[in-house]
Image 1 (tube, rainbow, N blue to C red):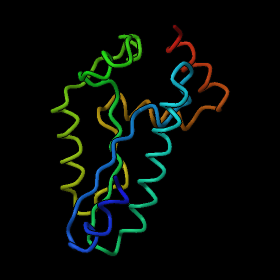
Image 2 (image 1 turned 30 degrees about the horizontal axis):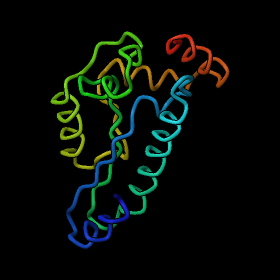
Image 3 (image 1 turned 30 degrees about the vertical axis):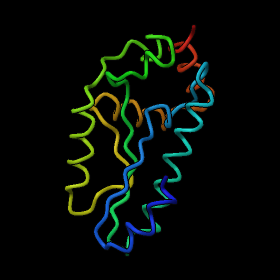
Image 4 (image 1 turned 60 degrees about the horizontal axis):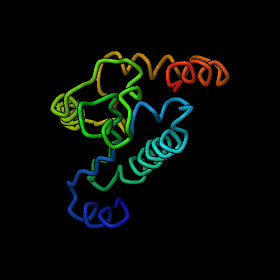
Length: 141
């Protein structure tokens, strides 16, 4: 999708490209390994596009929501994927993205929700082994 739209958006001189990553992008996610890896790719890919697009007027950002009240949980077939965390509404997640995009210099990525932001930061401060063990215990089936 990004490939299909990025050049026309850059050419416009004032476009916006938002890719949806996830809190899963910040941690290894046992029992949802492919999902977590895909979201980590989206985060890294989008942050690279942000840098590549800086001089074009195109605003590029990765949005990382945590558990959100959508049909996601119906599709994957379990309510347990939220790790017991409070779910945000889609409106709260969109409001986070819009606030970030309204900044004078929008960041390459934003995490939706205060607790989610804290968790993403904490994940960077722990060993990879500890991160896998913590996530494994919260996603156990």
